[in-house]
Structure formats: structure tokens, C-alpha cells
Image 1 (cartoon, rainbow, N blue to C red):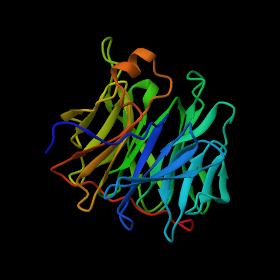
Image 2: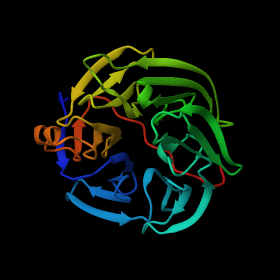
Image 3: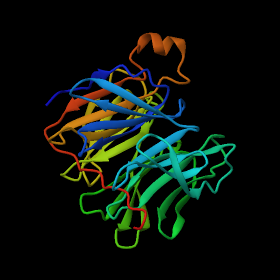
Length: 294
């Protein structure tokens, strides 16, 4: 296993996020939130194709039958394989002047779990939501930046971070009903000398949680009991999210950001905005497909 991440695509992303492996296509999708687009990366050829959207896209899931479910500023949408909107599933219930959908993923039963970000960075208006055939239901409120959504291998633990509060939580999750309860602190981050905080995450087949530390320049792996097992450097200051892929699901991809970074930082970390990858000894979990009728 490697000891760190290597560049696989100089994507020049403003705010790269939500890497998502398509098993059917053997390709990686990821978004650039600020540039309002979904990218498709073919690791065999190195080719990149881009779908342009009309608004910021924070997270995506693959839909059974093709296309995407996506969390945009205005709400949760179905989008076809060409990036065209099909229909709005649910409106963003918050003040869209300072709120947009951010991190999210499909749950084990095909529902979409997605959170928002409070762009004021102080009001705590952000939340975590579940979308299913009954509509949008709030699972958590009072957040600053909802991130890090991932599920344990049995689907009965939900991981979720509030990035600006430097905290990663777990919930008891009922896949049968999509309810989350008994929130507990899983890990806390940050210190006077380390501003690294939990952004997007993924879970491997051993049930360990991997998190990208924004402004921390590294990815960490935690055991299910919250023990820090290892950390791996990324050649940027702001990695944003990790996701497993590859034919054997043992390639860990990591997106990154360049937006809002100082000239000095971008000079020191010229690969900011790139897509990175690292081979791992353990496989990751395949992401479920979204089912609008779940």
C-alpha cells in the first residue's frame, strides 16, 4: 500500500467534491461546486468529460436506470445522463441566499441523504435531510456545514460531520425506515496549530471511516470505535472528500479545492484543485443506487 496520494488528474477544480465511482461504467464522477458542473473521469484513458449545470451542485448519487440525483442550491433534483434537469424532487427549505445543498449520498435502501451549508458561517441554519418517496425529512438541524455522510457496512451506523465545528458524529440508523437517532461524538479535530477539519468521508469493508481533512493536508482512517489508525498526506492544503473505486474497489480517490485560498498557499501547493488517488490494502464499499420510489 502507498503511504500517500498521487495526482491522477490536474482538474483545476475550484471546489472539487463528491467523488463517486460507477461500477457499471468503471469511471469516476465528481463535482466542481463553484463551477456548477459534474465531471466524468475515465482512469483507463485519462479522459475527462464535463456536464454543465445551471446552478451549484454540492453532491450527486447515481440513479438506477441512469442519470443522477443531485443536491443543488435550489433543492434536490433528478438530472439525466446528459446533465439536463428532469424534475425537482424537493426544494431547499432554508434561506437559499445563504444556503445550498452540500455533501450527501444514497443510503442502503436507495434514499438520498444530503445536508446543507450555512454560508454565513455563523447562523447555524444548515441541516441534514432524507429524501424518499414521502418527500424531504430533516434528520439534524443547527449545523454550520453538513459533511462526511457515510454508512457502516451493515447500514446501521450513519457518519456525519459538522465541518466548521471540527466534529464528526455517528447516529444509529434504521435502513428500514431511514430514521437516525442517538447522535454521539465520534471524533473531534483541530488545535491551535492544526486547522484540519473533517470534510467528506467514506467507509471500507472493515467498517473503518476515512475522512479528508480540509486545511489539514491529509486523509485519516479511523476504526469503528474511533481509534485513529493511520493518516496519509495529500499534496494540497485542502483535500475535500474521499471515495473508493477501481475494479477491486481498492483505489481511494480524493478531490480538492483551490477557491478562496491565498496566493501564497497556491504557490506552495500548485496542485490544489486536482484529483488524487492512492491504492489501499482494504476495499471500499460500493455506493447504492438512488431509487425515487424508496
